[in-house]
Every structure is written in structure tokens, then in C-alpha cells.
Image 1 (cartoon, rainbow, N blue to C red):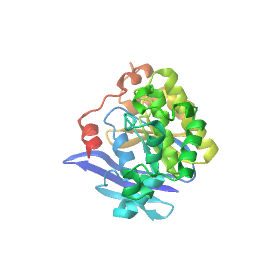
Image 2 (cartoon, rainbow, N blue to C red):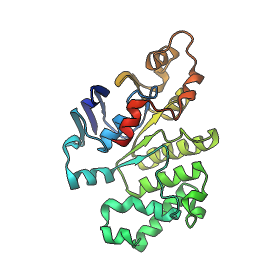
Image 3 (cartoon, one colour):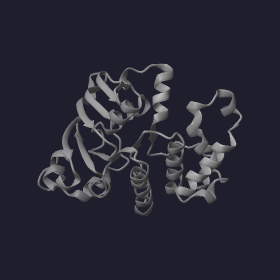
Length: 269
């Protein structure tokens, strides 16, 4: 299904992702964990083709994703939806229009410029919002919603693309615990009900253990753990977070939202 082979991404002399390889054979909920700067966000951006690999290869269903150009790359990005930590909505635009932006890669510039969407697309957008429990907010401006509600709008926009893969880059990092659970429950339900592959960057070990079928741990751009959540022991976590005997699992949550120089460069690349 998805094959990552020897992928490296460098920014200058610094390798944000260093010779990473793994394979996913069927739809699953995959969690990628590690410290800020471990290369998690950069890896997701190479899969989505928001940034190019320096070397290595990414394949999906026997197509070489890492070599796609122009229109083919845009088509791939419509099949591989991205959800971001900061939602990336248009604040002053109403919720349903934000969701309809999920069809941008499939519409002409003229129709999107004037918000001219087919009736069936509008109905589908409202149905997706209803599925996520926020249909009543469809006419409101996105900026009027809470952070958790805005993230569900971002998920709805991703579903509007009808993607084969959903990539979630720190989807709950800026949310309170209650909204974080709502968002993670929604992503898990989408995987189970739709049979979609979901890959999410996460910081906390308990979230990875609770929601993921498989966990990949990254440190300094390389994979140091790859296995089922039940094998994510405290010893394995020490290896991932490069911590000593005084390692505390609760301490991983303090890194939420913190980006080092490598990740900040990757975020604007």
C-alpha cells in the first residue's frame, strides 16, 4: 500500500529525516511519536509532497509518489489529505465554505474564486459536518468556533477530498484534553468506518497506546521503534525520547507545540 524506502530530507547539512524506511500493507491507524525536532512533521510533508525528498523513494499502490510533477502531484495531494496543528482554515469564511475548499484541486480557478460549488457538494459538506457533530455551525465564521470545533472542520475539509490517506500533523497539540479526545475519537472512527489509512504525529505515549494500531518512534530523524502499542514500554520510550532513568511519561506532554529550528524550517519549506 504505502512504502517508504531510504527517505532522507536535508535542510543544508542537517538531515531532518535520515534514511527512513517502513511499509504499510493495509489501512491502519499509525502513530508517529518522538521529541520536537525528531523529523515527524518533515516525514509527513514528504509523503504529502509539500516538500521533496533529498533521496529515497515513496510509493503508494505501485506509483512512485516522490517523483510526481505538477498536475500529478496535485492529484496526489487530493488523495493524501493533510490536517495541521493550527487548523489552516480561513477565519472569516463560513464553516461550510472552508469544508468545500477540500475540492479545490478538482475545481477550476474561476468557480473557486467566486465560491461557485455544485449543490451536491454543498449537501455532502453538510453531511460530513453532521457526521462530526458540528453541522449546526455550518453558517458560522470559522473564527467563531472553539479550537476543537475548528479542528473538526479541518477534518471535514480533508474528508471532502475523499482521500485514500489522511495525514494528521500534531492534530491535538493545541487542544484541551476533552477536545483532544473528541478529535482523536473522530480520526479513529474515520479509519474504522471508512477503511482509510490514517498517519498521525503525536507527542503523548498514552494517546499513541490508546488509538494506534502501530507506533513508529523517531529520534534525530531516524526510526528507533516500530511495533504495536503494547510493545511501547517505558524502556522503549526512553530510547525514543533519549532519556535516562529519571524519564517520566508525563513529561512528554510538556513538549507539545514546541518546534526546534529543524521543524520550523520544514514547516515553511
